[in-house]
Structures are given as C-alpha cells and as structure tokens.
Image (cartoon, rainbow, N blue to C red; front, side):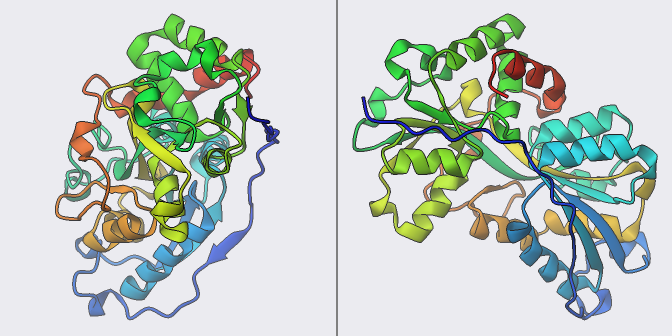
Length: 351
C-alpha cells in the first residue's frame, strides 16, 4: 500500500468581495445580435451571484460587457453557500441572476419560490434532460462524473464500472473525493433518487468506513491520483482535461473512466436562473441568454472543457457523446433535496 496523505476538510469560506467589470462596451446596438434585445431597454446594470469561480467567470463577464454594454457586479462564493445566502435574503436579495455549479441548488431556490419563469426563447434553447422542467432555470454546461485512476497502478478494466463497488475492501485507503463539493453532493443525491434512501445510506456509510482520502476539491482529488498518492478519485471530467491541456495528455499519470448509466457517472449541469424579484428584467435576461448563445457555449467548451448543451456548438475533443452518458431515469430537477444529502454525509462523518 502506498503512503497516503489526507487533506483535511476545512470549513468552506465564502468570498464576499464584489468584482465589477470596468471595460467600456460598444452597446447593444453595435452587437450583431444583442442578447435580450427583444425584452426592451434595461438600465445597463446587473447584479450576479456566482457559484462558479472568479477566475473562470470574470473573463466571460468582460466579454459579455464588451458585446452588450451591460455592467455586471458579481458576488462570488461556493454554490452551496451562495444558495444558502439567497435563501436567507429571500425577496430582499439584490441579486438578479444566480449562476450555479449544479442543478440541485437551482432546484432548492425554485422550491422556495425564488426563481422566475424564463421566456421560451431562452428556456427552449437547451434540450430536455439538461434543463428545468418548469422553465425556472436553464442548463448552461454539462459535466460528467468520472473515476480518475492511477494509470501506473491500474488498467481501465480493473476499475469498477459502478460506484457501488467502491465500498469493497480492496479499495480501502485508495479513494479520494471532496465530500463538501456541490458536484459530489449532487451525485449522492442522484444515488438517493435512483437507488433509494436505504441504498444511498449503505453506500455513504460503506465508503466512509473504507478509509477514504478526503479533499477540499475535485482538483485536489485529481492531483493526488496524478502524483500517485491516491489510487482513485471521484471528480468531474473536465478537471482532467484542464490539467492535460496544461501538462500534456501524455504526461498525465491519472486516467479517466466514464460510467455510462451509473449514478456515479451522472451528467449534471451548471445552470442559471433569473431571481423572482428580477423577473422580466432585460439585463438579467440578456446575461442568461448570452450564456446559452454560441459565444457563451463556445467559451465554456474551449475554456473549461465542459459539454456545451446547445446544438451546433462542438464539444471538446476526446469526450464521449453526451447522450451516451445520460441516465434516462434521472430528472435533474429531482436533485433539489441537497439538505437531506448533507444530513446523510454528516451522519457518516464525511462533512
């Protein structure tokens, strides 16, 4: 058994700093197809709460401002913490748009009555299965859950085809994952929805008792696998592609196994909602529309290697067809019960 190092799961911290884009825009009238134009004139300002990181989203916001002239003030934090903040602020929130890392947080806000109904020209842009069923939010990108494995220790056929097998003793001390991460929690929620509460509890307790390597993030989990400090990592697919783009695919010790149809291989989505207090706001609608435009979809595909959800935008090279990974029994709207999942993880001592 190789020596392991464990990354302590620290308390998540939310960044309360605001970042506003400062570049001058050409104005919607100069854009070849200004998003939200049909909705009328806004005041040219937008407050965005983002559950996605500043280093990823800030360049996209600058691009949006340059094309539309709309200035964006952003509050960044983890998706779970931003969602909790929105629930606390309720109708008094200054936020107009919520950009989420996963569907579950969007479902929570919808259940609380905090999301507005998107117009059909935005809601219908993304095919069924990758967006809300009631037009309360729209999917933006797809991310598949995968197993990263140490390619110097294992071959792909030695890696389980289902996460249910990860509770076996042969994987004791081998598995790295970030239990506080929204994507991991959404996977456990999917496990509850697809397999039932009892099966999910057995898996959580089983994997918790299998001496897992707990990390702060998907990136940390991948790094442990890539350096040989962990045998397996439960991550989103694009972390590997980002690392491979920087280091070269041939230099990656970590390899990926996709799990089509398995709860551990679900395709979750990032998504965006216009908050109830901003329903119909032209600037808010313009931003959400931009996210699902060719420019927005191309940005994510080329920058983060996530699956674009709008037809016509090519997916990054090397990814399986998105449709081959979808679990037909899962409605992403059912991932809203994150609170129950967090109770389950806490009960097993994982968070």
